[in-house]
Image (cartoon, rainbow, N blue to C red; front, top):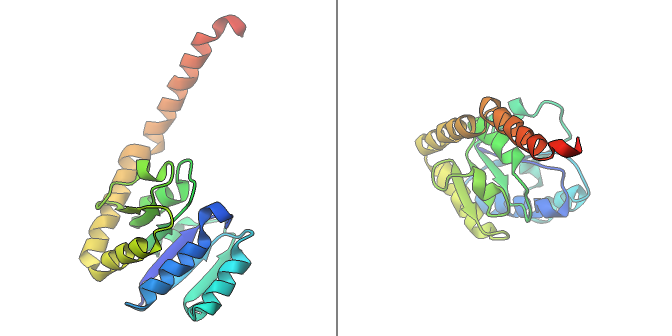
Length: 184
């Protein structure tokens, strides 16, 4: 019955998994939540240690690598992606497609897939206080959380569904082939 904060990554330093744990700790001070982390990598031991140090280890679940992440993402109430670098933000887009609003950093492609205030919120890299505040804001109103989740899903499908993206790739390939026809 408690809200779920969700994170999915390869747990490399650029994903800022320690910030995910810090955000969850700040949110826990205001309301009980669970944090579920999907994935594995070099930062996992440090994230586990930080959860113990902050006293929230009993509220944090590390699932490790998972083959089928969509059913897991779909149970989340807020997806956290505080990355330092992100070329596109596929994990956040996958969460949005599952109807989960996101709180992300403004790194790389994340700002391109998010619609501030509609599909979730964007904060500066490292601004865990703002990210925690925004997560609490989403969780404070179940109606707003549901509305943002619907808008996230609609945005993901309308702008990033394969029926829209694949033709764009094919056209790009066609243009490149045409431009370099004499070399082929």
